[in-house]
Amino acid sequence: MTFLARHRIILPVVSLAVLLAATFYMQPRAMSYFGLNLLFNLAVPIALATIAQMMIIMVNDIDLSLGAFVSLAACVTATFLNDAPMLGLLILLALILSYALLGAVIHALELPAIVVTLGMSFVWGGIALFILPSPGGAAPGWLRTLMTVKPPFAPMAVVAAVIIAAVTHLLIMRSGIGTVLRGVGGNARSVARAGWSVIRLKALAYGLAGLFGVLAGMALVGLATSADANIALRYTLLSIAGVILGGGEFTGGKVSPTGAVIGAFTLTLAASFLSFMRLSPDWQIGAQGAILILVLTARLIFRQKGSEA
Amino acid sequence: MSVLSRPWLWSWLAAAAAFSLTLGLTSGRGAGELGYAALSFGAFAAIVGLGQMLVITLGPGNVDLSIPATMTLAATLALKAMGSDPGTAFLGLVIALAVGFGTGVANYALIFLLRLPPIIATLAASLIYQSLAIWSNRGLRIKPPAGLADFATGRFLGLPNVAWVGLALAIVVWFVLERSVWGRWLLATGQNLRVARLAGVPVELVRASTYISVAVFASLAGYLLASFSGGAALNMGQEYLLMSIAVVVIGGSSIAGGNSNVPGVWGAALFMFLVVSMLNSYGAGAGVRNVLTGTIIIAIVIAASSRRART
View 1: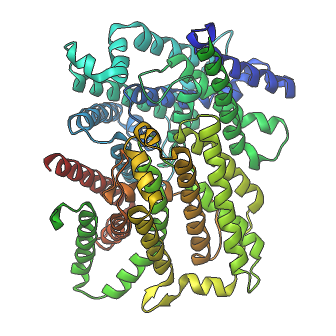
View 2: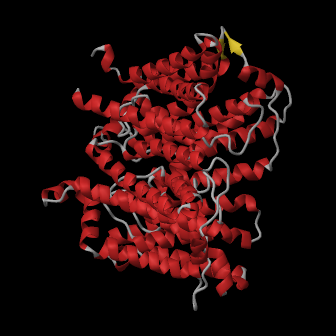
View 3: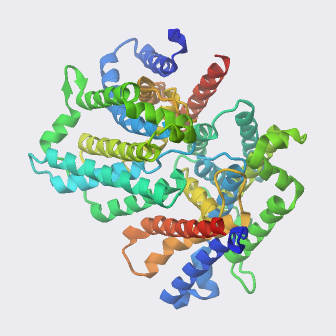
């Protein structure tokens, strides 16, 4: 195993650094406290959603309902949490619990997660439409303050990224339960043989995904100040791409929380990058795709080197 | 094997139930209109669903997320080339199918050459197709040539023309899957890739042709849908991403691959339209409608999986 293969985190870091350097070269004014915040503050909810998706991919499943779920959390935050904080909090807790329950049901009945979450995306989207039929609502004041806070030294987006990465790294990579959770993705049967209840572990992984999904919705409302039922639908695909970009794999419990956060930031930056190149905005979506392909190509080269050695 | 254990039966039963529940409200009036509308709109879902079914049959992890983008790109380029001129319908069709062929080749190239997981490869590629469509469309809404629009909205022997196209395609796919060597290769690959390769199945050829087929199906659906609805729109394919996966699963094909089900796809496509019109006619709002649609999808999946476990 080479150095590069052992340290999967290097590739996401290098991709983000290269992209950032290119952005600064195009637009030197972005290299400031204000510029960085502007570039990255929308990346914070995407990073949280990517962590949520990572929890699901960690146990070998995939979540196609995440975008709808984050939208729903955003709608609840912009309505109930603002008007009646206790009720809002209870609803958000219920959402997290229902995610955990979903994980347990998927495991107990051996259902394909991709289809169940596909169905759930209609359910979450329907409830969100029910709560907020037309765009509106308002962000709770404290949330607005939290998302626009100006910490010393580094902008909020960067500080938030470091905190998210550090917390999830401790939880998933360093703690005992995190190791077992990754073990479920690696080999569920041996985890079960070792005396763990796989159904509880899956419920825990899904519950964590629900928690980070709710946090993503709250962060999004804090930035956008209002919500609508479709506000985060594209997060489903962005979060999957972010996990893979960050060095995660679809099977085997091989995930990296730090990488996932970096992956989310890389995708966000990719969208702004071409606008700095003064290419037509038509190509912004395509740029995300192209950069995704480029980074994954680089990963292939790394991996081949790893296998030769 | 008794009739009851046929996996395609359930989607047809569900469709029939939704159909009769809707008519129960109007005490039987409008049955013809409802059936006609279901066949028209169901045809698009069935065409993309057949393509998605072939890909899902390839085995776990195989799914094409670029269907909406391919539909939009094919429709946009075809309508642009036709420019509403009469007599260009065939040219438009050729261009649409060529676009589909091209995106299929590109998708497979990413999967094979870069060894990307298909989900990520088709996702990344779809972003590029989407940009291409935006770039070439420029917000214009070009009308399809009158003859083509008439064909797409017209009927033959009382059934919508698009339904005939969808039906013909379903028969071709069924024949290819059940009676041709390629179909057997596809099923073998989906059941166990390594075993299929060792048994001499040209696995990569099968995968390549499958990814090209799904893109060609999507481009055909996009071409017909744009002609049907009077022009291409950038979000025209959006709902077909989830729809294509949903009809495959509700139709009784195994999401784990290696087992496909053509009649079920059509049943599920009709069901997906009928359930929405049923909820509409009972006065359900958009929110309630979505919640119930999702619940029904999950219920069908649970029913299908427990049925399989028993047999």
